Amino acid sequence: MLSHFVDTLAEFALSLISSMGYGGIFLVSFLENVFTPIPSEAVFPFAGILVTRGEFELFPVVAMATLGSVAGAYVFYALGYIMGSERFRALIIKFGHYFFVSEKDVNRAEKWFEKYEDLAVLICRVVPLVRSFISIPAGYVKMPILKFTILTAIGTFVWSLFLVYLGVWFGDSYKDLLSLLDQFQTIVIIAILAGIVWFYAAKLKRKKQIADPSS
Image (tube, rainbow, N blue to C red; front, side, top):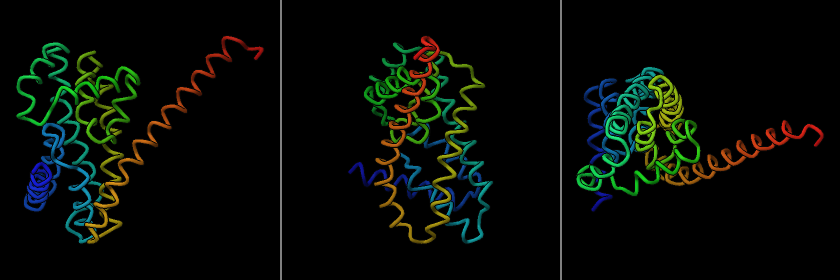
């Protein structure tokens, strides 16, 4: 049932893009960050297909997707900023199910942020299920809005460019692309975690070398 609902949302998002053009891309990007069941992985490659057909241009598509995502990210950031952890959590427990947001989702985002701090806002934009919610703990700690915007924009731009370009690359082989993306998400998460481990291991090694120059 949930799978059918998500498919319906994807079809709705595709219809918005088809009917509204670049404005539809902005709106879908915004909604995907606020109403998380909308799957960007199934939607933005379609925009890439329209690029190959000459209906869209690549850069404006990616730009509108990025702007819409940043605007949507401000919603959870603002709620976290204004309400704080305890009040926001109480809100999610009471009303979250209406918006497909659970306390578990919030906990997952908080753990990412506690572990990787500002870096989490950047990298989580390509991590399924976390990318929308990572804005919440950033709001809790009142991350400077400019820093939040820059990190969100960079991460979102990379992710949007990747998805749209996949649509350009695969063309009308849309079903094959969706199957590939299901596998790709797992690879992305593993690659990100490996990169983070390497980054912090190198950072720790440098600190030890500074503390003990003779080693």
